[in-house]
Amino acid sequence: MPSIYQLKPAFQNLLRPLVRRLAAIGVTANQVTLAAALLSVLLGAILALFSSIAWLFVLLPLWMLLRMALNAIDGMLAREFAQQSKLGAYLNELCDLIADSALYLPFALLPGIDSRLVVVLALLAVISEYAGVLGPMVGSSRRYDGPLGKSDRAFAFGLIGLCVALGWPDAFWINALLALLIALSLATLYNRVRQGLRESVTTN
Image (cartoon, rainbow, N blue to C red; front, top):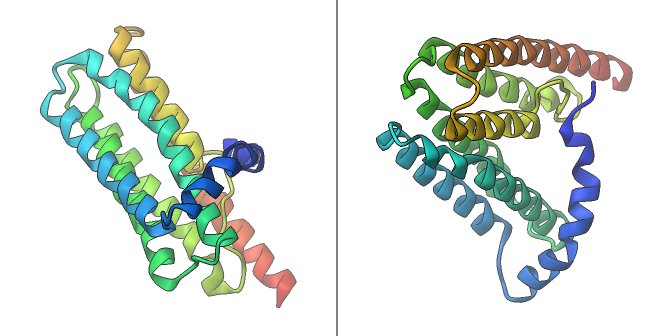
């Protein structure tokens, strides 16, 4: 299904000159992965502690864009500069989940926002990514099927953060959008399991 993830190759091509320079000065993929996670947790903590200051949420779309770049950079450093490792594989998956949860959960503290929707959506984000990671265990590839992959969620929460910062629309419509994202997360979970099983049958 269509997903922002499909734009990844073009995005990587834009970043490749920067990646070469980073590799030349000794920056490693794991360092980039950990830095992105730590900064995400820091921003999430700031948003949670100061959730009453709505304009702070404008930082979220800006950070989501930068974080997408960092996620692409760490993968390129690993694949194209012989930095792949078992530790890196763990960090890549775990740091993304930690960062996502840290950035999503502060929305539950906003007045008028249904905290249950935020928590359920954060949980489904973890579960759908886990379903993708399980692909190799059943003989298929790591699944990135949409319609709500990591990049799509980042875009959606960046948009919600911008809406909160601007004070438009009201909480009712944000809750409606969160409910829609939950439905899309369930579809993503279904698609990843289905496609993983289908691929495992055709390759075995």
